[in-house]
Length: 167
Image (cartoon, rainbow, N blue to C red):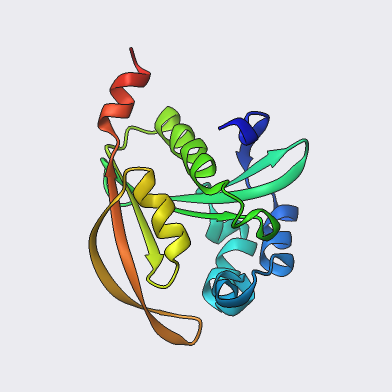
């Protein structure tokens, strides 16, 4: 986590939510993740009411480097959504970024399983998730960006990590 050692995680500010929604644009096929491509995602991230207390920003020296959201699925399971600033993607930061998020989630919640849902063509992210210990548990077709896409569902049992953190 060397490149993320000076990071702070805070509730996502309105200013940064709008920056992510309007200004973050990814290259090539990854433009799929531009908030402007999906009106529902765009609306959720810019609306404080829709965001609720589930969205967080990752900042380094007051510069926004990424964000994530936590969607509780049950008392023991939560889905994590995440995004790294476009000019930081593809540089090997993904695993450290994900571990930073996991650590935060495990410090503040009692989930035993974390879930990720990733569009099937995003092989770069899938490799990172596998390296982090997530396993594929299924697929689903999801309406997004004015079409339907196959998403891979991945899960990780984090109860061992929680035990290690408590000892």
